[in-house]
Length: 112
Image (cartoon, rainbow, N blue to C red; front, side, top):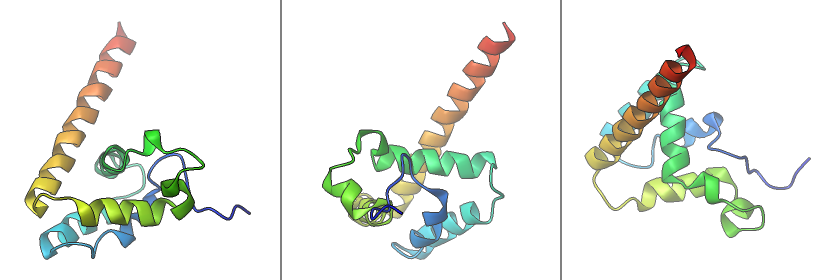
C-alpha cells in the first residue's frame, strides 16, 4: 500500500470533500455533480474541470502537491480560487464546453 494518496487525475471519490469549501451556491453545484451516475458526461466534465484547475497533468511524484495527496491539493485549489463562486462555476461550465467540443471533433473524425 502506498503511503501517498495521489492519483494521475482528480479522483471522483473526492467530490464530497469539495462541497463545503465555499458558499451554498458552490455546495449545490457540487451536489448536482455528486448525484450524477458514474460515467455521466456532467460528472466527467467536472472531473476534467478539477484536473485542469488543479493542474493534475503537471503534478510530479516527488512534488509537495503529490506528497500531500489529491484531497489536500484540490481542497487548497478550491479554497484559494480568488474569484467568486459564480466565476468558479462559470469556469467549470467553460471547461465542460471545451470537453464537449473535443469529444465532438473526435467523434466526427472517427466517422470520416
